[in-house]
Image (cartoon, rainbow, N blue to C red; front, side):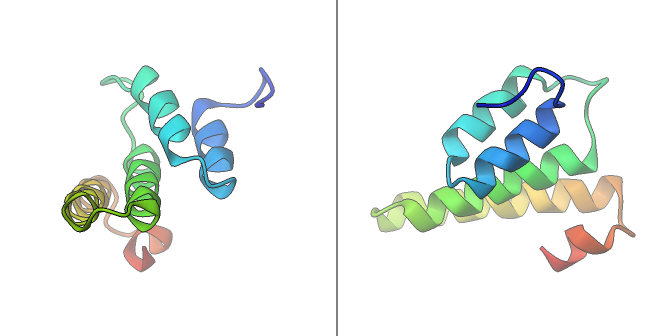
Length: 89
């Protein structure tokens, strides 16, 4: 599991890399507020949703998750339109 010194964003990113998108979204939701809102948080939420769509077997759920992931990427780009990593995602 994650070390206590890691930030919630780093922990969520590590969980996404370990193919655990549900747990990553739970961490992001716990730490989501106006003060912590950032383009990186939206990007990680989008990454998790896209990964969940890839793991889903239901076509309707896959479509919904892909749409949700796209919304998260769009919000991230609105906050930071010049971030190269977000544009590529």
